[in-house]
Image (cartoon, rainbow, N blue to C red; front, side, top):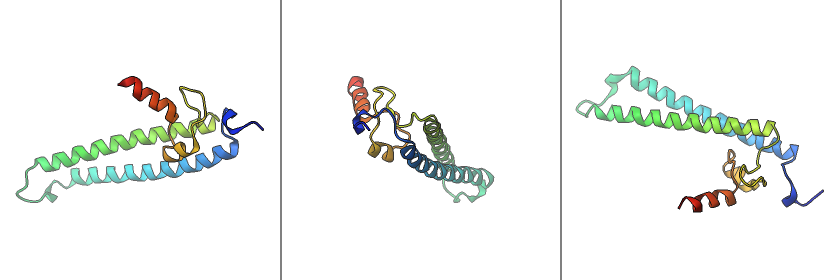
Length: 128
């Protein structure tokens, strides 16, 4: 077999490992989203739970914070689901700019990554 640097995709075994990691992250993200939804619901259903004497703006700020966190979590879930599709299509871990494999360390840290560190740094330096 050719050198690791010459590989154009991860093996089925490696993809299976990443699939497992993604599924665990996805479950955790879905649980977190459910928690945020529950908090939003409780805040909406129990307006009397506010501490007397505090400004009503605190409840509004808390609702807004929870809605923002839930929206970010939904986006994160979408990224993880897209990564699972890439695993299924056997293109997971391939940088969308360079076409090279993204390092396993990067994928373990950010399993939904679509850019290698090199491509991400190139984007950052071009943006300055």
